[in-house]
Amino acid sequence: MGCAAACLAPRFASRAAELLRPSGVRLCIVVGFPHGNETPEQKAFAAAQAASQGAEEIDMVISLGALREGEFTAVLREIEGVRAAARGAALKVILETALLTDEQKVQGALLAALAGADFVKTSTGFGPGGASAEDVALLRVAVGGRCGVKASGGIRTIEAAQGMLAAGATRLGMSATRQVLAAFGEVS
Image (cartoon, rainbow, N blue to C red; front, side, top):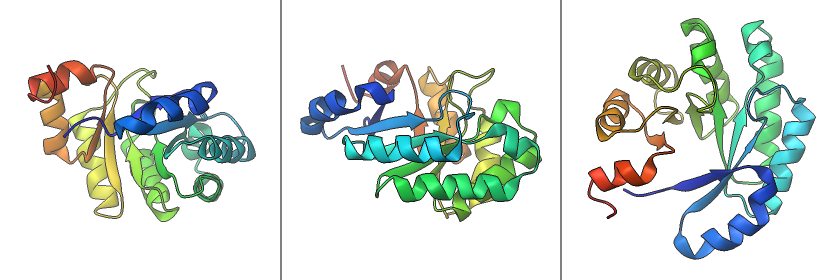
């Protein structure tokens, strides 16, 4: 166990990559944050730039409007474009599940897996709701073993972390990382 990655805004990429390198913690840069309203080309450009500055992971917020309006081909192409631009960096696709119906969550997860995402992620942590065990379980069933499921948003206790893992999360996103890892006995 431990911290897999530190997720930061693009403006910190170069310096953060330098500082994180000796720690073994990967640098994750988020694109399309927080609402996913940028064009697919803007997201792809941001992903390529982040990768060139040392990001080993890219989190992208999908176009929630396109997903909610049933523009599935556009969503798929957007994810594929960021996947290609990420230059081998792991790709996590943020769905912002609190804003979606269960059907939209499943459709978004399937599109992410089809486009080659490494993870589908519940939320940015800045939306109206964070991760729920129900959403994690739904996403896990939707993607099966094709990609990981990252529970993110509102996980602040060991009990919440354990609940997300039990529901099928393969990774957790937390702003309370130190406290939760301490409860697991990982840090002091």
